[in-house]
Structure formats: C-alpha cells, structure tokens
Image (cartoon, rainbow, N blue to C red; front, side, top):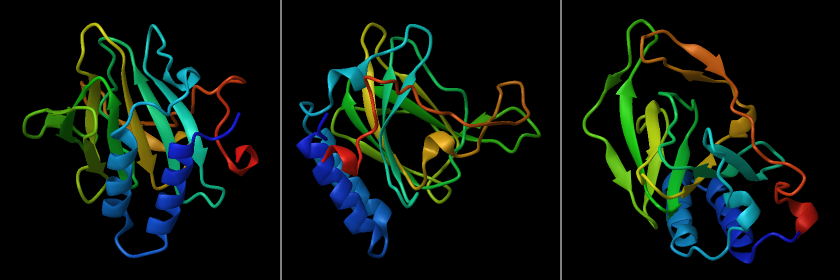
Length: 191
C-alpha cells in the first residue's frame, strides 16, 4: 500500500515545521490544508467500532518526534476526560465533534472550563500543556460517523497519559492503536 500523496506532503510539512521555531502553529496550518479535502484517507482507516472510538496510526516518526492518527467516532461515542502531556493539533476531516476543556488534578472530580466547542470539517484546534491539555471529546453527530486527524509531539499510542474519572481521581493509561494487517502505518517503506 502506498502512502496517499496528500498524507506524504503533510508528513513532509510536519518534518519541516519541526526543524524551525514555533512548529505547532505551522503544523496547524498544514493540517488545515490536509483536512480541507476529504478524498485521501483510505476507507480501512475510517472504520468505526460499534462500542468505542478507534485510533488508527497513520504515521509515526522514526525519531519519535511526532505521530499522525485518524480518530474514528461512531454515533454517540466519546472519550473520558483525559490529558496528553505533549503538544497536539486536531483537524476535523468528516462529520463534527465537540471538545470540552476541563480542570483536573485527580483530587476532585474534573471541572468543565467554559462551554464546549464544535469542530467542523476543515477546522483545527491546538492542544497541549500551553493551550489546554485536559478535555473530553465526542462525536457531535447522533447518526453518523465523524473522523478527525490528530498530530502529537510523540508516538501518542505508546505514550503514558491520564484519565480523570467523573467521580474524581486519576488513572494512568496508554491508548494503543486499532491498526491491524489491513491498516499498517504509512512509513518510508510505503513510499
């Protein structure tokens, strides 16, 4: 399977941005260009699971500097309140999702900050310790699949993070990926 041309160009743009100062906004601009067109993601990486969202690894930088994933949301699916511990950029490819930022330290139930906001196709959002790193994300559509593309400053599926249960407390987790033989990550081997 060859890497989709649009994804290959985006990977190159991320690598270029990381070589300069203030890469996150520049990665956001490149991600906005990528998600402005919904014609490049292979269907295998857009398959929902009936019980929970799926996270497919599209590309992990061999040096561990970043990863690119597709999040596939079935109707009504959402994350728990969670953190990332690294910078990230989210771009909406298909459907819509809501994001609600929270304050949480594990000693009390997480507290919503402001109002939830909605991402529509083509829109991006910066996340991370400097912009707001703790949130809950949900598919905003009651009867359709939504897909967002995420870029993180590490291999996020192998990175130790935290969930903040609604009743309070904190639990460590590593998210992993939903990839299988039909959904290998795109790497230099595929170019």
